[in-house]
Length: 216
Image (cartoon, rainbow, N blue to C red; front, side, top):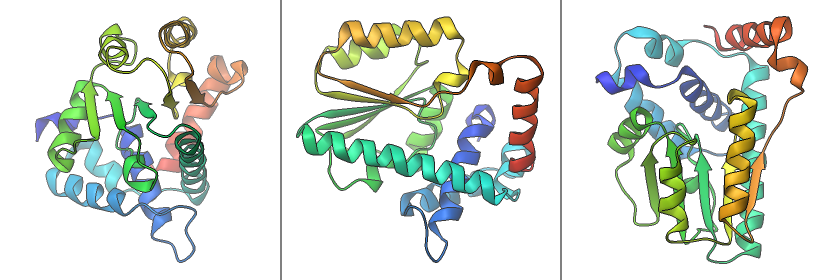
């Protein structure tokens, strides 16, 4: 399956970490759909970096961090939907996220945005759902904003889990401004890191630690 070769390692590592945590005796979060996706992906690859990522052992610290982050974003989503019945949820750079299946409070529409090669693979392993939609494009493209705002311009929760720190500063700020200028009564959830960890030696140090924790 050639499309899988273009899927980012980060998306696979994040998925694997959630699945490992969910199968512990006392897990930080439950993710049955994550296991289903990982099993299907494992059957689709036989060689290459993606195969090595799926087979490598992850450090417990990385597993806990990614699971706790996912759980926190789940909590934000549940709170938003309780306070805004019928609200929409848009997950930016979603990778192989399975939040739609982890929350019981269903939104009127749940949309995931990611690069076309990621969405192609995810559609093949998940199929379709009337309330669950995937749009294949860069989060920096205006196309998805036009598609969403053409149907819903308020009461939208935007989730940027593990995303903005990978964008250039100008692009991240530009994206936030576009959302603020297009949607009303909506929210954006994202995490930030200190500027010093995005440059020079500290950036390389962080990258090396992530690679070490993921076994790559």
